[in-house]
Length: 270
Image 1 (cartoon, rainbow, N blue to C red):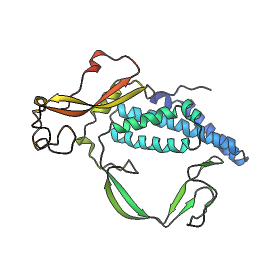
Image 2: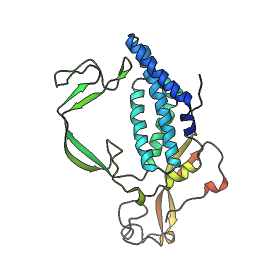
Image 3: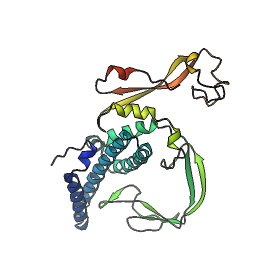
Image 4: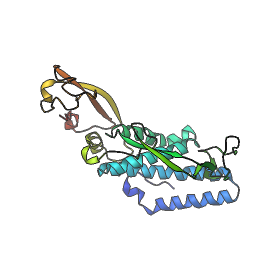
């Protein structure tokens, strides 16, 4: 049975839930009967379908300007893709749209203005295997590998006796959801402009990061104590204020369809 799955409305159709429940039932039955190959295939199909649905929700939230919610969902997509890719062929990742999704996850994330995150540090008593319950020690491991699927179940390392030690401020977080910004103070123009020209989550597009040079007169509203528009990290007065021009980061969006003529206009943020 083929089901259209492109828009947020498609994700709410009863047929989608029926397929999800059917895959769960088939996986459980196969696992009970010792048919590990079928159980693993059902796991992969279930996860791939859930990832497609989650990515559609990301696009829906971006359209609705729910940027923080979409950011958290992008991280969930990234994690889910990692587990699926560890248990799939390249052909499967292509035909199930998962490589398309992974490509767009990274590009959406690159357009966000988030740059400061908190990173908690923990002391862990011990880890155990989610498949067999084995308690790990430096000289004692089980046969199961983290991230691999066994009889329809994903192997994870479960944490026990965890104690928080510290919280650090970082720019490259392990947990991307721990954003330390007030969204109301940030500029989401890049994402807003991009999604305004897209009709659905699986429409192809690309980005090209470059720089554009503008005459210094166009920055008359930037004071000498403001951060320099060239993004050097220095103040405008100490950096480009005495030059005849400023080179600022610029992004070109590349679409797979013709756009209105006014879409070619450059958005100048100063």
